[in-house]
Length: 210
Image 1 (cartoon, helix red, strand yellow):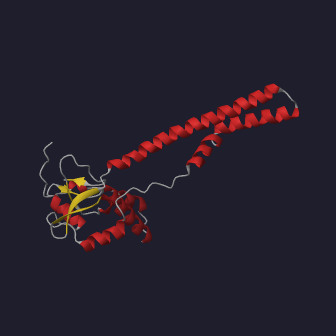
Image 2: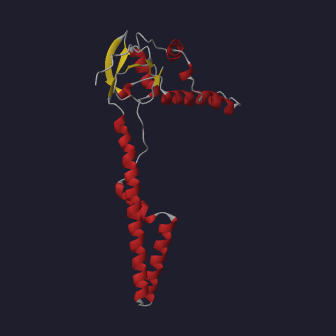
Image 3: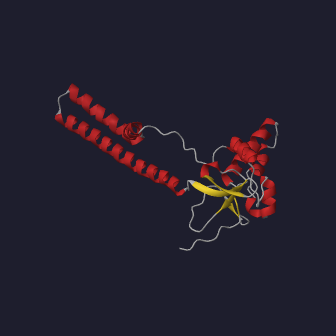
């Protein structure tokens, strides 16, 4: 496949939708501190995303960057400190054994089965009726097998979601420091970075193509 020549970034400007949402959250927090009574209206205005409606020059002005020169190191450092890394922060997960225990012992249906099984064992201890023993054993086996099946179904879905992270490129080319082309980790992208894309490359999350 013939590679497309590097575009001088006149057509590609990274204006992160995700980070704009962070900006919106900061605006809402600032409005809350000021005691603004029209909170709902401020929230609606804060989350408005209009990057796709702006011209390249207007977008550069809004983000404090330049198509030809990109961002300076100082601006990059300041924005990394303000917005953080350009990466997803999934919630903390329980250990696998805890997930399995939750699948077996939680849920209304499972609780009912456990309750029924325990009653059967109690009844068997009071009166040695093997039918109660067999019924209790069947209920316990059913609830355990159901929980294991549910656990593996959830694990399969979770692994599929984690595989999406592999679609994000580990590195990307940007223009910074008075027009220099540099390769950086995708997690170090900040609002205002100018991305250089080639044919067939994966794109970093949260950029705007103009």
